[in-house]
Length: 477
Image 1: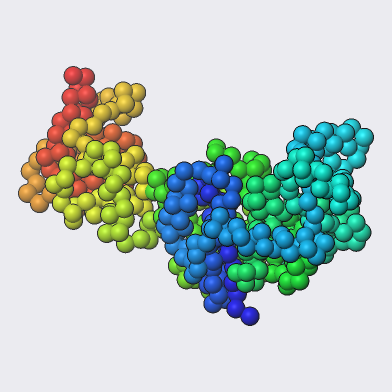
Image 2 (image 1 turned 180 degrees about the vertical axis):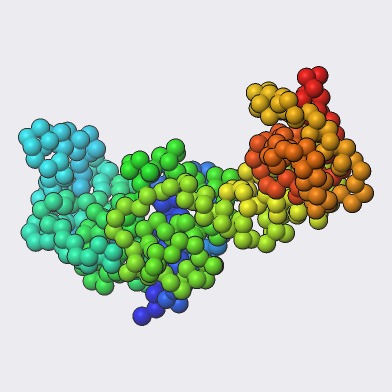
């Protein structure tokens, strides 16, 4: 049996973490088994469709590196197929027309709840005679098609993640398969498409678990062999609650904008509910993940989305990535912040990025961490300047180091460090007494990458100019 799975997004919104994980797990399973991934767009909810959502979803999938083998198929282009099978169910007595209005159904639900009864559909149109049905058809016109649920028994199946699951038919209601406008419901269209597309495994979020018994009954009524089901656990925030915008429920475009590498996001997403043997957290490549991926290693416990862990993983990927690649990806952030003049030497820029890429967790952080390399002037926070520059010995130390650097012909990190060590030794002070104020003078910060690498990259002119500014502050000017 060749594995065939599908990812079936709805264009009522953009691709979020949960949907991206579902797409990824389907893709990894297909690639691991040498199977196929089918892309199907479930676009029947026209009223709620978001403008540009389909294009954005496809773009985000490609950005993640998720490729599909068939599609994209659109459900709105397959309406005649759903009608055909709905008519077949009607003909075989497995479904019936329902003429109840939404208002009537709402009243009955409230009455049932008041009496302490289940609020589901009471099946009254199932009992209509031919004459009664004809009268209602003429009087009301609008009607839906409902599937008949057996009154007794239960539906059992083995979920590939959760094991054996049983639903008693007594808790299920006769559900709508075709709406009054001729559009199929999600539950029905899924079954028809999965059968006609020869889907072997349905891997989806556990919010669809309650749909499974209904869909299995549809498979049985239509005489089809159902696929295997695997329901992925919910993703919660670090607060243990459903994801919100604050805890990670944002579209994939946000992750792209922030500067997450797609391969790092794939690495993180696969750990939301799955773990390889040995609980490995970082992978050498997506190929390694494909090789190790298995449905057997998926947990049925809720996954916890943690931005700090995602940042840690992304930082590792940035650190180990080729500097030319990272420089190319970082340039747009520098340009957006107006930090590039357009005449920067490419080799110099790569050295700056190489120095900073071990510190940043997101590409966008280059502006926060490394803007001082590009700014013609930097500003100093007054409180920090007072504590760092206004010490008694700082003025003399900065002056001595400035004089030593001004004599250099070969302005390298080695020479800058050699002169610093001499000034420290001659003054009889600790290394930090000079290094800390020099770092602050050159960067406006108290922490950062190696000081002497910074000096070499800033160059002689900019370094001396900034030291002059700091010396003025140290003198109280």
